Amino acid sequence: MRGDPSTPDGIPDHDENDPAEHAVIVRLAGNWHRRASVKREELQQDELFDIDKLDYPERILPFREHPTYLALDREERSRLLSWAWIAYNRTTVLLEGQVVNPAFQLALDGWLPSVGKEKLQRSVAQAMVDEQYHTLMHMNASAVTRRRRRQAFPDAALPLPRVAREHAKLRDSWPEQWQRSLTTLGFATVAEISINAYLNLIADDTEIQPVNSATVRIHNRDEYCHASIATVLAEQVYGDLDEKGRRFFLNSLAAGLDSFVANDFATWHRIIDQTGLPGGHRMLHDIEDATDNRPLIHDYSGLRGLAERLGVEDDLEFDWSQTITDSESAPPT
Ligand SMILES: [Fe+2]
Ligand SMILES: [Fe+2]
Image (cartoon, rainbow, N blue to C red):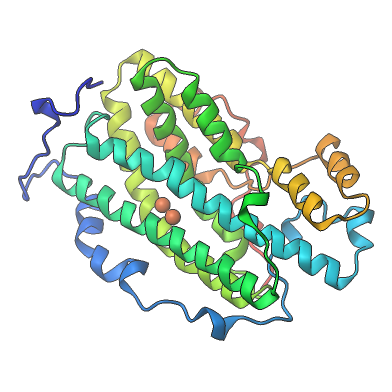
């Protein structure tokens, strides 16, 4: 690892015709101005808002079949699902701001090896602009929900989302800069190659609030390209690490995936505090304690594909057995 980002070997390579640049990166760096959401017309949120639609899909609630939930009337369900949407936006915003963009910044700052190529650097900088725009889109999406539902739904009532919480805890537990950098890169890599699975939970849902699924669909389009960028970045960094660094990075990927795919019960408990649903906390404990408590996301094909490319599928300590691909988990249309 480089200890000092200002050392000469951290200076980017400016050769536009460098044959060593990855073909996918050359293509993505060159067409960003045409494909990026930030370069397109903004979503007309108010026009798309339908007050009669639920804000979040019931089919992905961890407690959707619990008697306490099933006993709620339409208004109580609607309020709970609006909160779920606010929390989904907040999770996305904090994932972009506290995990993904910090990892990209480390790459630009020269803290990661092998990221000196001009096109790869440009792709990473473009992706950071995309992420900042996604933050704005999801903040706007929460704002229109608050405005049209005439409820405060304060972000401040929610805890730090699980993935941001666990990333910070693990990162801060390491004494060395290279360990902290690889922890952030591990979590960000998982996020970037698995976020499609997270966004797909909502993007193609034709039943819920149209402005919400549209917001997520637009975000998702950018993320298909980020998955390629993150894969190349991870491959190049991994290729340059020594054995100790490689083992450390693989452990960071596994830890990142564990926290990324799980249901965030701390957030759900806080939502129950806010809604005051009778029996709500007990309902959550029932689900948390159940042996068949399944994660929110069970499409691990992104990380599995990366593990195969790195030739480390057996070295990653993660249980792949619950993998369901996108098409199997897609909502009925
Ligand atoms: Fe994003
Ligand atoms: Fe991204």
